[in-house]
Structures are given as structure tokens and as C-alpha cells.
Length: 448
Image 1 (tube, rainbow, N blue to C red):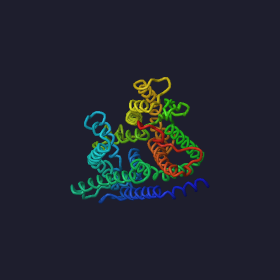
Image 2: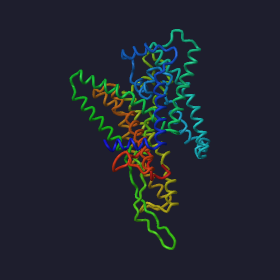
Image 3: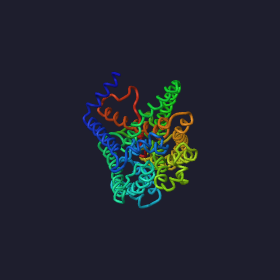
Image 4: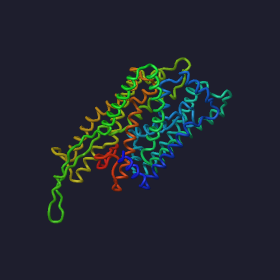
């Protein structure tokens, strides 16, 4: 406890870090307040009555989890930042198929700015498609629509939803630039954590009411095991040994081969992005195809609307595995790493520099990505397993799936940034005898 208090004091002593943390907290507060500002004309009482009567399905609970309650509150930020994530997915896919986008990706900072502008424009388009579906599929179905809802009301409400989503994106970008951590991921994490106390209280009250206290104990133990397993896979690294050729200093050669060095390849190099991408892709069709809701829903709604269904979980697991390989291919470029090693005089023992090194790294990355992607897929479907075991819907969302991966990954990344500030100023880290590792650690090559 004494060391923890000292770490807090050290954080507060670093002026730049203190300002970044305070700015981050302030912007998060703005985001949380916005999630409770109800759309003009919407009958909030009808929404609450519908929720109290059990009128909220599993998909609505999941979407509300990502938006911090903004979805079920019919707030101005009901769509959250998921449209922006969907737009980012589309732009990255286009980067693999469209030469013009590939050219922008290779133009450095100027190209990145142009891609960001196109991503924002695409976000507005996706919001414009999702907003009418949201009002029809959720607000109108709950009986919260204004009685005299005119064309003007529909137009202004859609514009408000688009503006709210873009404002959330702006908050996330400001946190990334001026605050601590990845702003977009951090906003999602805050929205998830905001629902945790309520979900745990509901599960605990149910266990106490049924006289089965041992059940809640077992659930907490299982929850901690899942967190530990997630941390292990997020932090897991395959170290490839490296040797360095002799270099000449003055008139003598210095042998650096004795210095231990390695190339770290993370088991989960893609971080939390595959499951965010997969979840975003799964929600788009349901939000767009709102027709047929009164007759029990169309095929897409029946298949993708039940997040505890077999079809939904199989498709989700498949998408996560695909996106893991896809995002890993973006994050790790074996040929570039091999070229960097060759220029610096480093080589992998027993492997020839150049093309052979690139093939060796590519093979190794493919092998370790498979178990990493399968673990992500298993974690993603754990809420369904927890539901079958008798856990209530709200707490089952935290038992695994997207929420646990995002929370662990984002928290580790944020703590790693804070620790970097402390270590750069020759202060003790947050933990004694070790260092917190985020998705990017010091010592990794530029290819990551």
C-alpha cells in the first residue's frame, strides 16, 4: 500500500502527466454526461417502463454496453463510436484492394490525415444509415416515439444522432492526442465499466435471494481466472533470438554477440481490434435491416439479433479469427523487419538474412497467431456459456467476450503509458520488479 501511494504521488508530481490525466478524465466526464441527454421529443418514461418489463433483448444489452447506456437511454450519443470503428474497418479493407488508398497509406503523415478525413466522411454516411433504423427498431418499438412525429422531427433527430456520434469521435481523438491512452478504446472501456457495478449487484442480489451464495463465489473465481488468462494471452511474447555482427570502433573490432537480444513477437499482436471489428460488422446488418420487426424479424434479425444463439456465436468466432490474421498482417511486416535486421547487421541464428529471414518470421507469426485467434474466439463466446450456466444477462456480458478483452487490453495500454512517463523521469514504475507491457513495448522494432 505504501508503494502504491508513492506511485500516485509520483504521477501527480509529473506536470505533463498530471495535465494529460486531468484532461482525459474531463473529456470522459463529458462523454458520460452526453450518454444521459435524451433525444428531443422521446418519451423517456416509456423507455424505462419497457426495460423494467423485460422488453430489452440481448443485442440491445450488448449495444448499450458499448455506448455506456446511451443506446437504451435514447441519448444524443446513442450510436456511440461504433460507426467510426465500422468506417475504420472499411478503410483498412479498401487499403488492401484499392491502389489509391494504398498510395495514401504510403504517403506518411499527409496520407494518414487524408485517410482520417475519408474515415470521418464514411462515419457520417454509416450514422445516416443507422440512425433511422435505430429510431424504428428501438425507439418506436418501445412506444417512446412522439405522437406527432413529423418529417421535421425525423430529420432533426437523425442529424442530432449523427452529430452526437461525431462528437464522441472528436472526444476520443482529443484524448489520444492530448490525454492518456487510446481515446476511442478508452471511451468504450469507460462505457463498459459503467455497467459493471449494476450487473454485479443484480447477480449478487439474485444469488442471495435464492440462498445460493456459493454460486456467486464460484462466479467471482471463474471471472478472475478469465481475467488472468486474458492478461497472459495479451502479454504473451515469442522471443526470437538475434545475433549482432561485429562492429569496428576506432582501430579494433567490438564483439557485440555476447549481448543478449531478441525479436519479440506477440501472441496477440492485433490487441483488442479483431473483436471490436467483428462486433461492429455484426451490428451493422441488424441496425440497417429493421424491416419485419413486427412479424418476429427477418432472417438477418433472427440470426444476428440473438447474441446467445449458435449461429451468432459461430459467425462471431469465425470473424474474430479472420480479423486477427488480417490485423496481424497489417501490424507485422516480415519483409520490413528482415530488411531492418539486415541493415543493422543483425540476424537470426541458423537463418540466412534477407528473404529467408522474412519467410521464417512470416511462418512463425502464422503459427503463433492461430492459438491467439482461437483464444480470442473462445473468450468471445464465453458470455453464451455463462448464460447457459445460469448467470444473468447483464453479468454474463462481463464474464467474457468483448468486454473483458477491451478492458484488459485498454487498461494495460493506459498503465503502460503512465509507467513510461515515470520511468523516463527516473521514477519507480507502477509495479515492483517488473514492467507493465502494452500492445507496444519499448525495444520492439518499427515493423510492429
